Image (cartoon, rainbow, N blue to C red; front, top):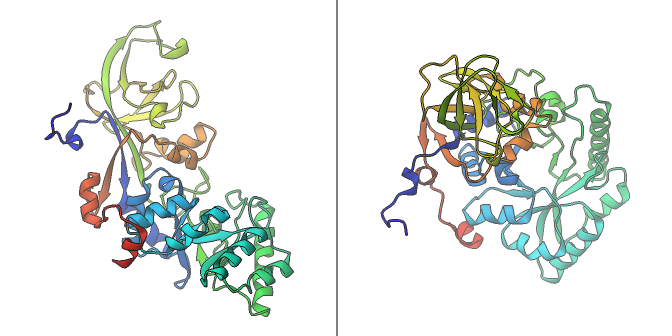
Length: 408
């Protein structure tokens, strides 16, 4: 049994991630400068805030004056309410009739995307003498969720229901991150046509929103009443490795430590499959980070990690808990030294975008795959804090019922 006085936060860590909440606040402010003053910002914190930690990011965003938060599923929204988040929360994914009472109890705004569910929810509310806010999802070409945007008759009828108050209307762009793709213009035109139709019928919801990160940055004319920048607020280029002039700060850094150093003679091979062979005597460091931590396995003999601010090539296969790197050019490297595995501010070669490109994926996938076993540290107002320290700084309450959190 561990000693009751043991502080687990004081243990040394072989690896960790640093979440730069100061950078998040900067990115929110940068984005505000790119959109009209009256336009609201919805910050998506689904999938544990894209792997960055939903409670920390949500509370930092609230402190920065964020207008809305967005989650994918009902339970994600309930968690935020239980920890006192006061701002409106939009459930971006679909809900079912079993979810109706929970959405109402926890003051969560559902996005509704099919007539059957909408009519059932409206009837459920009227039976109880209730009303509830919602956003209507329309399909402009993504063909994932939503009522067809050209079905004006159905949309007109749904917007006039008595139990549901549709304060929002939205759609999602499928190709905003593909420069010059014609589908983006098609979707914008379809959404704008619907909004103009509703304005003429005096049915336009007050919050119309279409633009994600790439949509808002590349098409400022489509901000409407609210934008939904996800990946951009986390500080990553929504266009991948295509250059952009947005002054965004990467929010996540993945760090590790050297755990062993060895001299590998010419002709000896390294890691699973023996796919790297030394062509000269090589000083090799074993770093405590691997695909079990969310660091992508990727291609063999590809990529870098940085030690003492210098690039060190990855050798062979990335393992579950370790990666080997060449530190021959860093004679003073020692066991315990920190290693930057993902750190876009330090060097573009280890940015999330570059690593995603090298691994034939997108930055979203890498960020959301970060393992929970990685210890979290948080940059807040110029200091690096543990979770318990950050919680005091942001005044994050203990878990409570949503009713209690809304009353305080």
